[in-house]
Image 1 (spheres, one colour):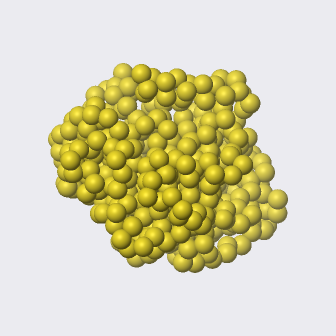
Image 2: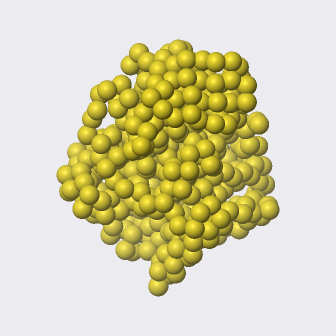
Image 3: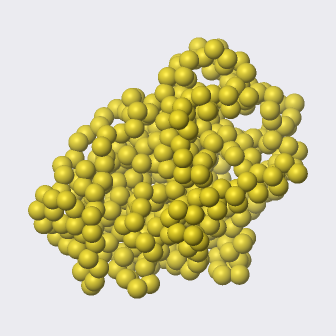
Amino acid sequence: MQHTASYYAASSREQPVYPTLQGEWVADVCVVGGGFSGLNTAIELAERGLKVVLLEAHRMGWGASGRNGGQLIRGVGHGLEQFAPVIGSEGVRQLKLMGLEAVEIVRQRIERYGIDCDLTWGYCDLANKPAHLAGFEKDAAELRELGYRHELRLVQPQDIHSVVGSDRYVGGMIDMGSGHLHPLNLAQGEAAVAQTLGVRLFEQSAVTRIDYGPEVNVHTAHGNVRAKTLVLACNAYINGLNPQLSGKVLPAGSYIIATEPLSEALAREISPQNLALCDQRVTVDYYRLSADRRLLFGGACHYSGRDPQDIAAYMQPKMLKVFAQLAGTRIDYQWGGMIGIGANRLPQIGRLKDQPNVFYAQAYAGHGLNATHLAGRLLGEAIAGQHGDGFELFARVPHITFPGGQHLRSPLLALGMLWHRLKELA
């Protein structure tokens, strides 16, 4: 299966083809999943001298890693204080610090290996109401207390047009330590890095069965991999591969449209500082300019399990509510994909209790570009025997299994999100 017909696939710098797994292979670690989680775990392990085989069911970066909004934003999880009873206040503080470290891991990987992915620094949280702006002030104070070294700047209502060409917002907070990039180029660049480090990469190699034990045996249609350790990094696409993990992550549809290239004047009006931009609503809007001045506008997370029949027809009215000046602008690309969401919105990083040589990372709740890279670092350290507090902190947080099985999970979460939307309007 090839990449979805997205702007990223159409504009990617290269799409190397990796072989399909044939025959039996032996490795220290078998990684399942060729997205950011799997690729970065493989890189971290290979840098530590381990022999790694990575299996991808489709193409490298085929899932959310190659389709997402391209926004590289600080932080992991939502409402981290909720975890204080489990990991303590110092544990919560460490999670917040790791949320800052995660962006630095991406920065360092791109710089160290010279990955060309249109990395551009600058992001703005947009306030939909005055309470959001007041919250940004608290966020800025906390970030400074955590030692955040990048520029943070509050945008007052009268200055909002300096960051976004819309009347929908009452302020914002600019963060120059976050930004945006071309995610598929990053994923493909990281695949090339992994291969250079000795990782054996296989595409079109869906896993059909896993034999667990002191040594795992991972089967595909045409071969198998025997390894001491297994990493499951499938996120929303884990399906029934491991019921214990698939029950804890809900696949939810997210959608993006890309306009035709805008004139320099219109692009400057839409996003004067070329920032990544995101609002604060439950049904979030996020958008940015591409390197060739298209507006990439995303959001509309679907928990129903059903995709819109016409993504552009569904998303374009949402875009025009924000940017009425784009009426008549052609939509050149429309695409969607699945993101993985857990019940508590904290990334799930750990190991199976009954299979201690099986590690996993999933459920990034739509903020995976940085969190996946952090997961790769933590998994690499843990598997290589360099146990740090970070892996143990994530592993200590319990994650519930969604009730109702595969068919009822989506409707139940859809009802829960509707409640949050109604609460937002109150």
